[in-house]
Image: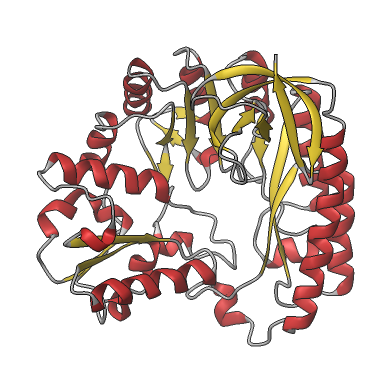
Length: 408
């Protein structure tokens, strides 16, 4: 979401006469657009704001942190602007103050999005913002506001404009794409409409287990251009903790969704988010998480230690946290368990052929390319191939958990 927002902000300012530099050190104005889902990126944004403020830049704190801590940020930022106030960012530059009214709509922002200056082979398209779930650990409803869905007409126009200009992959994004609803059109309807536009590759993220429907899997199964990938955050394998987190589903219901997805979309790749050391997590709760991980056999997972986020309800409710040494031990065990599963699954790819889209160079060797399978698995290719190329590769090896392919 922040990548998309940053791209559109850049386009808005360029169209309004601002010049983009290739380095923040050369800039007069520096915008830091940050995330507050976890503590580490929040601290990093604060460090950057202070760094550039001390160097005499006009510093703008943007995004979720700006929404959450507007008053504190004004001590080392010239302008604080929340996600729903980006429409006015060009006229606000030069002023001092905080602008964080998340009841607004992004009408002007989306107009710029539909006619962005720079277009890549792969682009994000926002379909909704905000969240109404109020999970106990999460601050999104307080930083992005309540759910607001864009009109299907607006979204389809943006997708059409992008494909006409060469984009071959579209990722529909939102805090919870499955809760999309606008004037009678729900997410399965929108997904169907986007698929009919003929985009080469379509993805969507993020899905909430409570809101996703088998009807979405039916649409995925009917269209070859909807990629067989589902990011479905689990958070914990303990039904007791899921209730504490206010997630709205049980582990049994989560398993039903996974099994339904795999039955309806046989080649689907499923990734997830998992949290350890949520307050009151017992060894039994953690063992439940390991059990679900082993049962589901995720294709990859983002794993992290719980961090208290103000003003979430968990921040105020739990005064005692899981001891750090226990949290680190559980996290390490979870990572090791997932990695063993992922490595074994990757080894089963050897000898098979996959369609991949090149999205850059290998991080370790610029002479090699990197691409994504239809199921969003990263593959290193033994050849230097331009970004945006789609080709067939045969997997010949797995290094760590990364498949290595030879072009066919």
